[in-house]
Length: 126
Length: 192
Image (tube, rainbow over all chains, first blue to last red; front, side, top):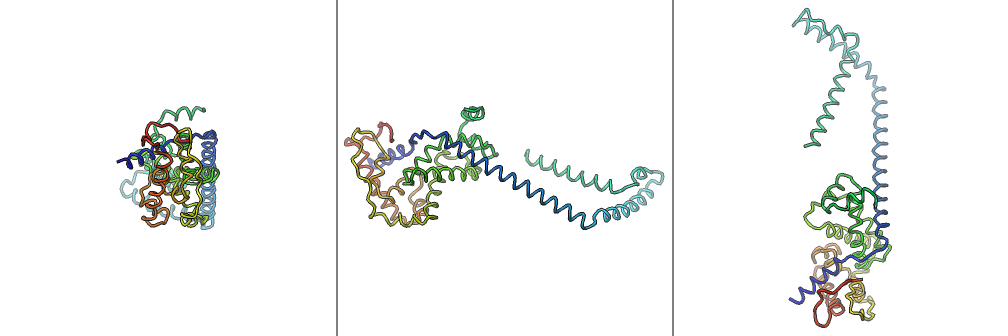
């Protein structure tokens, strides 16, 4: 029993923190190191994003993707127009945007991105 | 005290840890202010030199910030970060190949056996100087960092029986220096 009491007393003695006059300076050093690590991480992520963006754009340009999208858009436009003409021959809404179907594809892509953002926010809220 | 420090000063450790888990570094800074001395003190009691103890304590707090999501408030934050610090110190000793030397220095070390505090003050830090390095390490890990004998043995890479022996011998020496003749350790103040 005496042994147990002594061990408990020893634990209490260990729990008493000694006083350090430079406690505030120590805390500031730790905060400084945290800030440096955080800033470095942000820079790394930013640089990786920029490099990734540059590589992605260069790949798009190199693969002549704009021309391909235009070709696909033109084909899709014909199919859509034919389909709509069969359903409602008098409906000519598509003529409003027929000058450039790439706009429709870009808008669709933006809508998908927007949906992605919304979903991310919803998941975060949950 | 800055505005953010004042705001965080009234929060509980668990609330601060929750904020820190969201990336709030100033909240974690408040935890460092509260528990920095305890962690630095533990490392010195384990046998680290002051500069080494402070470096290790800084590393321990950074590691704690990285793993703050693992702290779920089930125990005291101080105990959690002390265990991290104790393990960090052992890793440092291992990295510098000092742990093995320390472990075999059990009987060779010449501890400081100067007179106990004649004023009767309970001086844990002074009493710990009477222990050999492994005894001091084992006692501090078990009674200061709250590790079990088995956890200490695993962390030190020593047989369980060896750790128990170090702890037993260390406790005997501490008892001889700390426990007053009437056996009443309670109610005494301060440990330096």
